[in-house]
Length: 576
Ligand code: ISL
Image (cartoon, rainbow, N blue to C red; front, side):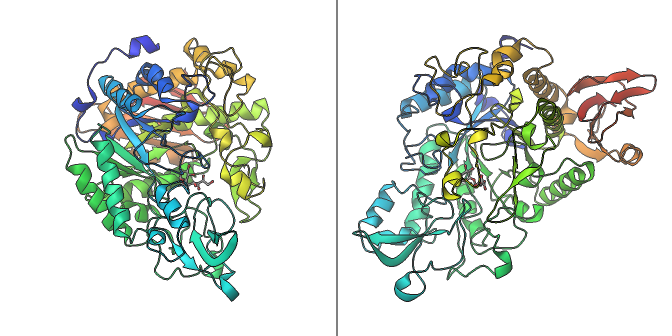
């Protein structure tokens, strides 16, 4: 299907059902890397506005925008200096307002990113604190704590930053240590806010309203599980020294503390006070599906990303276990599950599932999910086949699905970015031991020629673009009916045409999975209408599937005397 053929719908976003978020396909835009309207090498709001018809052509119901606020960009904008503005490199507030209106006219809801766990060190509150003595009122909006040891020369406790190293930064006055430290669970340029302070709570409630009043339909909440810290800042137990890791199964003193839930109850009441009601999407990293579900009780967040599934291995039984546990846990609180294979923090699926050993974080000894070397073409082909199959799987699961820009093109991770262009604070804080996330943030290839492949006309881009991406560009893929772009568009549209795929229950096909242990198979079933059969072959040899009409397949499947041959690393949907 071409872009033009698919942009003809004219339903205004306000006409979507109130619970659109339960089943939505949401497209994630990383503004810095999407499209560059003014040629300065940074993507911008003008670039997004020009490409809104492309996004509409994918058939998605909403866009989530990563932060575009004023920021020194030490962490790609997750270090916010002004929550109510727009970074001049990205545009103006008027540009964003126009973009929201244009998206709505195309029937697309708009979600922004709110970053409540920390500000930038350029935020006026932090600057005010730095101009006063530690322990002052201004410091009480952050976590400013006396150090241990003689003269407070040691950090207050053993907490580690998610981005490597201690989670504490010494506070200096006139170039001398004060013996006080501030907490930064991420980069030193991202001081953690103290959510026990009433001004912090009031400020964020006001920020939500500021954007809701401008038509924003909801927020993705950054590090939503991190806002409350255990009183007294207790050390981790020694065995939890890997505790900066996300998805830790143990409760930790700086993640997932009980006091967090009252914050979201309050936010939910604000979101519910608007017409149409606004939506809250949590970035919640907790170790079990049950703990995740606690954030999704009816008076808290609407949805939260399922990171257990994002981290799932290429293995049919593990995939089944995670999908089942997630659906069951969310069902208990009446919440849908939200599937995500890629985002701006995660190694591209086409590289993650290429079957290549991964780098090990030298500090924690944990795999980073980043392939330890550049992939061969054969490995890339395998990774892409698997990424396409998993995309079909997630689009067929009950709930909503997020698609990260470039995922619809099957982009791979750029593993070999030169050290001097890397920007991720993880790279700097680990002294280059961990490459970090720049490789999944390389700008979008739009055309198959030019240094920046249509990202802009100037040929400058904040991260260099691989010339070998030309065949993956939108222009190339628009011409190829077998392309990943064509597959994504068709899958999203076929899903929308089959109520069973949107609203049906999931019924595992135990018969098929017993016969073929490497196959994941289920039906989506409604009270009336034919069920849709979904199968993904995680194995190495083709399997025979008995079904009638093929709806879509992640690559060619062949019909046989008794049904269909589903090749390895392939998924398909059928009317069963
Ligand atoms: O990417 C990670 C580590 O390298 C993740 O652990 C990531 O830090 C975690 O998902 C939290 O992410 C969010 O908050 C961070 C920001 O850097 C990420 O881009 C954002 O998605 C701090 O604001």
